[in-house]
Image (cartoon, rainbow, N blue to C red):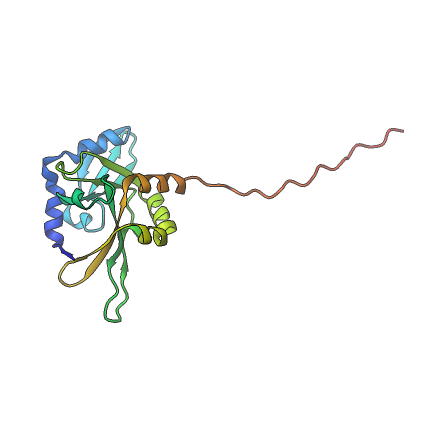
Length: 196
């Protein structure tokens, strides 16, 4: 089980080994006028960066940065995304708290999944609501297929599922494909009047 401290994790994501996350966000979203790092209070709500587009739209982004060395655990040698099942695991008769990936209250528009340069230079900007839908639909399957790990903060435990990035991206793309059912159109009635 891995242990972590929230404040240490926050400092790690802000430093990001000197990588310019603002530039990554500008490159990923067309029309960005500015990108700002949020303050600690907003960061704790799951919004790490706020991008403002030229015409005023605001985009909230949650950075999901993996620790250096995580690539040694990748099952098939490609980037894995850490998707949180439990933010607080149920324990001692107490109910748990759903992980960020399943959180219907999360206001984030996108999650930005990235790695320390020693592991990968890839970054994945993913629409959060489609990720949440894909994760809900595949959770039972993915928990049988991919590695799970528990992390401890000292006072509670959380749990993540590690899914290869291409699998997640395919599931997100599929989650955005909708079939809208339309009621059948009744057959046309022959309203032509008989000729006299």
